[in-house]
Length: 329
Image (cartoon, rainbow, N blue to C red; front, side):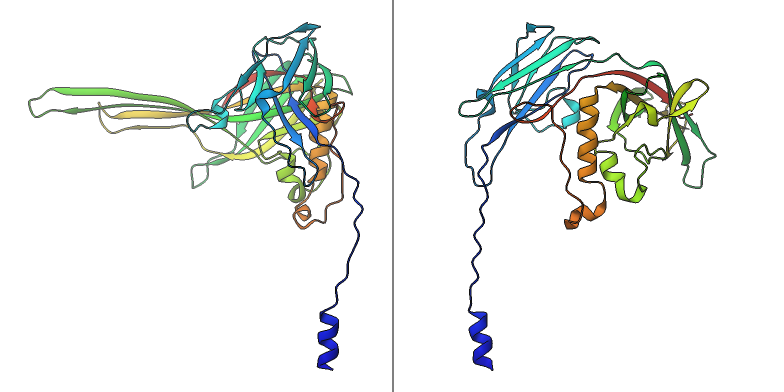
């Protein structure tokens, strides 16, 4: 019996896997908007086992606005460590500095030796109109925080327009300090700074009608980006409205004496964008590909990611944004 088990355990089963080889292709991500600079991020989507070397700086970038070719610059790796959000242009990416306007037609072509060239086009949409951003807070709890409702309202009767919003928390801190020297001299000074940080909030509004516990991470895209189709927004007195809920801190002030006092002023910045349909579809299909926590176990259904890049992968999608700030107190 033991010999039979050993005999079976020594058997080998060979499988012939006939996987057709795919050529490596260029990936590009470019989101031109109504602002001063536009980054073009590129990479290579490699076939398994393809060891092709890739020096991004050798790529040829042809980007045109309304048919006019733009000067393209390259941002190498930063010399010092940095926080990505502190820089407009990511490292090892291309960029142009022409200010985009709503209605601009943008075309992109990327070439690299030995690979098929890619191309795409988009239009920068009109920015959001008649936008209002407010924050309503409930009474403070024992931890000096409270539940807050973030509301965005805007005017747009269209059914086929698309939107996105990104929130940042703004913390303005001021302190006046001082002390008295043994000889009676009074030494005073002030410290003041403003910090910005991305802010991901809980979502009360769910345009895709999916379970909150299954889609939170993907829905926020892990970056604080939230997007929706205009027809999914709520109608509110002739305007469209989107609601989000979260917990927030409050403004704080202190005074120890005439020399030592200060305050902290908390507010939030909401940048609301009108985005092109292809950019919405790119975000949406990325969300569906990771729509629930079971995807970590390989149990999520397979889903393609939309791309409008001919000959490759990625997205060229236009957007136009409006920045609004709301105080908590």
